[in-house]
Image 1 (cartoon, one colour):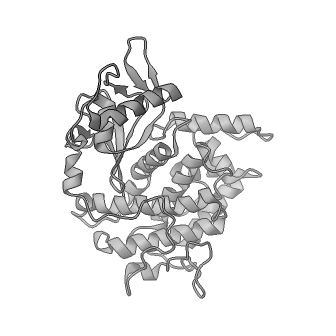
Image 2: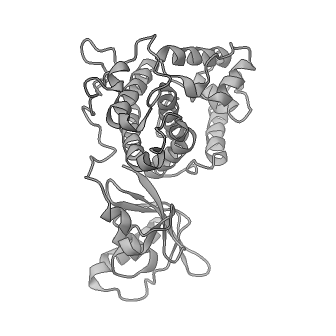
Image 3: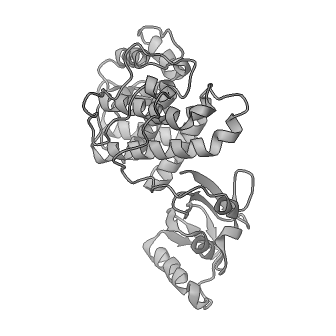
Length: 367
């Protein structure tokens, strides 16, 4: 599953396309060039009525120049239904929406679409298991997604295991999942702070500057849970009495959480993160937009920094590997939003699982 940024051919409406569900979301700020005063063909009359209902509900506003502007993201549309919203015309929407990345028609995704995957927000009971003898088996076995590892399986790497020269690493798994949790917490979809914080060079330097131990291993080289736990301990030491997710939220942009932190101050810090981060959805966004933009941040600052691609494989692998990576992150995140997963040990089990599946399914793309 992957989310693609798209735009209407006339460039007055923007959206995103989910290639797992074939659904389009028209993003707020888009201009809809549809004239509700005309009588539409019968096959799109329901779409015209839907636009009218959304105006009445406040999801679309009439500007002073009589043009229609999207106020809240409009989700769950087919490409052709989104076309009616955008330009009021009947016909295939696959031929009028273009991909921001490359400018190609959305129709190219339909032509080259891989086999349909499960809807990404479905909580699966069991994900793909590592192949016998694969890199993944040297890392971990997948855990049972109900919350507890299967009998005889710790669900984690053993403390001394280190695959620093191989495959998808713990470093990138921890940053990828913790970024998604951070975004969704700041948007209010997680009630409590994530059990861990995002760990990267900025946070480790900030921790060292506050009296914590200096880290010995760069975050991108962390491939064992032992090394990850050492970085986690450094952050906890620097955070003092604060939860490390709250501490990281403040120090990432050079601040410091006050000793008597109020709910208003915390909410302000969350909104500041969303507004300052160019890859974050703005405060008040719908869940689908929040998840979509959190994955863009993951692609930029975590998954895209994996230095273990085989030479010549990076471009070739990008689409299928990113699609599966996104799907796994959303599946894992759903357990945190539902409250099934919420502890530090749950997080560690989950990143070990993420490493195992990624290396099992895409071992050929990595050194």
